Image 1: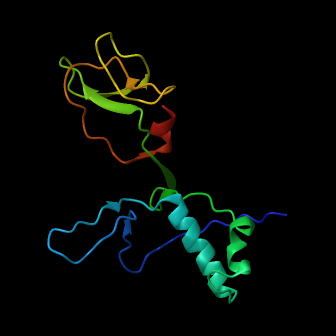
Image 2: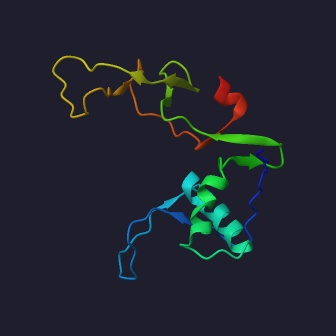
Length: 152
């Protein structure tokens, strides 16, 4: 039998999530952070906390067995004030302004074939995302969308 539990993470101190690139204290060194933890980062944190509470030691069989025992799904961003789950913005959506209209409009990109004369180096079977977009630059888009907007 599987038991589902929702965990709410409320940090006391700032949380920093970054990629695995080496980082040093030399001038000019940069940390590349993420605005939100990757699923595998959260899974490792949850399993690590469970293993620590049970007295397991990293690297031993019981610790490694937590991967099979504890499935972690998420993370999800939750707006506590409005009681809503926020979803990461899709990568195939673009906000563009039309010249005759002031408000940005949402456009969906779909895999397509570029016009003749355009070369690309994508692996076989992959196609570039394209769309019937108006002229101009895309408008900034929020990183997370409310579910209602996401459904649209």
